[in-house]
Image 1 (cartoon, rainbow, N blue to C red):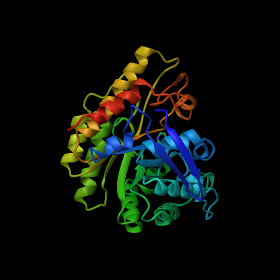
Image 2 (cartoon, rainbow, N blue to C red):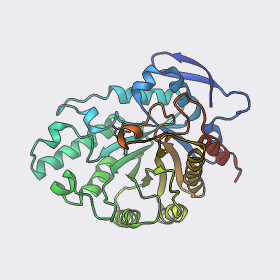
Image 3 (cartoon, protein in one colour):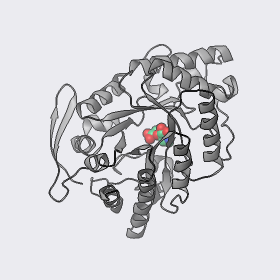
Length: 341
Ligand code: XIL
């Protein structure tokens, strides 16, 4: 996917791309034929510093997700002091390039500011703090966010609710509250519950299913479910269509929100082919699902990936290598998107 790009950096970052010979369509063009948005997480430091990285994002993707800069520890590092600057720059970049933004994420147990986790707040105080965070954040970006990951990773693998500061202090009702507050702050944004290891039909995805079904029945404004899809080359989810289908049948949207497929390093041809197959499984499952709205990868190049620093000895999880050269997975994604349905 080497692109011939003339990047114009003006007030907002914009890029004009010409697709290289032999690749007449970008991924976003191909995805558009399926009414699908194709997205990537964006490392905003790299976006500012690395012109080829910037050009790939502008050219190939129709939605972006801030990898870190909308998280609570970034937007409110000191209580009452907001810093939206990095997120605002990404939103401006997306608007300049005709891209939708996925907001990530409002309620999570990780990447919280220290003032919050060490504040010893009462339940009432914490509830007001969460409510204010959701109102302030969603209001700041009102009208500019397509999908919000409202609640992230609230379940354990066995389907019980994860023991977090939110569950412990506020009880399970914090989930419905979060969706109600987000909806009040931006009634047009799609509001998703987002989690990992819920691609297959399993205890965790069934707990998510039961939750969203209950929320819907209670009139809680939830639009759908985000399936993070952090995978490994050794396993391709084999009940994913069925799983996406049951959310579809509830009248809910779905989205693949953080796809990557890691392997033990070093990579080799066999692992790279297995990786391509897993990416295909994810994308084809989404394409087969009526209300699967978007397919987002958690970074598109091995040059910038959370995997090596998180999973020891693993990496090479993305569609392009460190030099932006396409891997078999990139070709597989192109092929899947090129099939006419
Ligand atoms: C990760 C980022 O990629 C890293 O840069 C950061 O250090 C930690 O968080 N699930 C999520 C994402 O919902 O927000 C996480 O992103 C990866 C797992």
